[in-house]
Length: 405
Image (cartoon, rainbow, N blue to C red):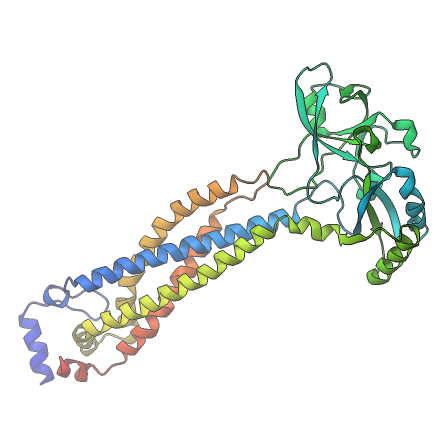
C-alpha cells in the first residue's frame, strides 16, 4: 500500500528530497488562513521586538540618570525640613549642637529642600536692561563643604553672614551667560547690587531631564524676604537610626513646638525619576503580555501548518529525512516572518526611542547591540515555540500519516 502511494505521488510530478527543499504543486497550497496567520505572527513579533527594544533603552536611560555625576556628593546626607522659616541666627545654636556630635562631619542651612529643584527669580546681569530668570539658592558658608562642591575661582562666604550681605557665588553656566571674561567683582542686580565673589562648578539638584541652569548662591535670604527652612547634615555613622534619634532630641530641645521631617538626599534624588521607573515596569509588563500572545499564536499556527503538511512530512520521512530535516523545514517558514518583523521593528523603534530621549538634557546612546539582543530574544522565542510543536509532528509514524491521508 505504501509503495502504491509513493508511486502515485511521483507520477503527479511532485518533487521532494531528503532535506528541506520545498515540495511543489498541490503539496503547497495557498491557504488564506495560513496567509492570515503568517501576517498576524509577523505583526505580533514586530510589537514584541519593539517593546523589547523599548524596555532595554528605558532601563539603560534610567540607569544612566541614577548613576550620573551631579556635580556634588549626595551620599550620607540627611535633610531636616522644618515646618517654618528661621533667620540665620535662630538656627545657629542648633547647628552648633549638631557639630558637637562625632558622627556629623558638616552642617549647612538652606532656604529650601535640596533635591527637587531650585527656585528662580528675575535679575539683571551687569549692564543689561533685560531681566533674566536665574535659579537662586540661599545658604551659608558651609554649603560647599557639606556637598563637596568645588570652588573654581574667587572665595567662599565668610562664616559671619553679616560680612557678605550682598555677596553671591555663581555657577559656571551663569558665568558663561554673563559673557564676562572674569566674573569676580562684577554685579548682578535685584533690589540692589549683588557682587560676585566666586565661581563654583556646575551642579544639578533637579532631574537630569533638564540641563544645569544659570544660578547664584547667596548667604543672606533676608535680601528677598526668605528664611532658612532646611538643615543639611553630612554624617558618617553605621548606626543611622541612633543618629536620627540624637538629632530629634537636639531639635526638640531647641524648637519643641516646630515639627520637622527627616529624609535622605539620595532618596529625594531618586524620587525625581519615579515616573520613569514606573514607565519601565509598565513597558516590561506589556512586553511579557505581547510575548505570551505571540507564543500562543505561533503554537496555534504551527499546529495548523503541521496538520496541513502531514502528507509532505510523511513522504519526506519515507525518503530518508531525519527529525532535524523536518524541524528545519517547519521552522524556516516561520523564521522568515519573524525576520520581516525584525526588519520593520528596528527602524521604527530607533525613530520612536530617539524622540523619547530628546526629552532629556542628559541621555544615553542607542547602540546596535540593543537591536541585536532584542532580535536574538525574539528569534529564540520563535524557534523554541515552533520546535516544540514541530518535534511532535516530526516523530509521527510516516506510514500511519500516509495511510490516513
